[in-house]
Image (tube, rainbow, N blue to C red; front, side, top):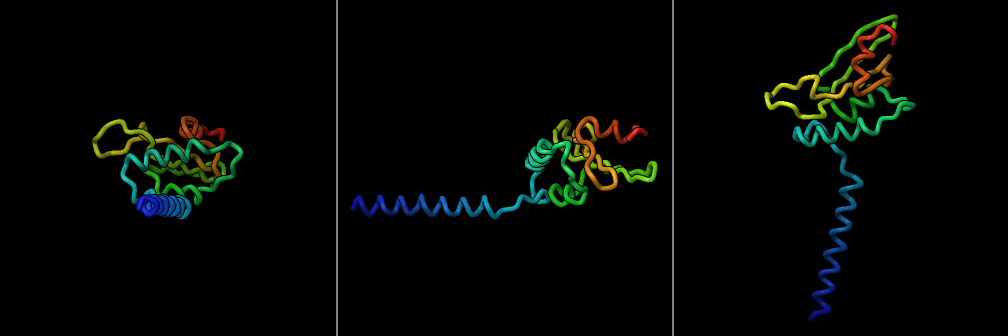
Length: 128
């Protein structure tokens, strides 16, 4: 009787491990279906992993993070600059997302050039 119970327990643990592994491997996070707290954390993790030498395209960021909360764009010196703001910290529960609740990601001709605090100042600078 106890061998049968132990066998069922081990079978249950094994089945749980297989199902958990499959979810971890095949489940893709979708920012559009997340609640705002999860999306903020997801955005933070993604932005924290960015590296200066990375040749990340704006399309890739849009594909992974979804639509930005705020967007700015301009043409300057025959280059297109896009500044995407993704919400990364909750400040005030007013239903409006503002720049102080977001982290900026700056692209020049579709390629990542800056993020974080430097993105907004680089966007406004004519020396980019």
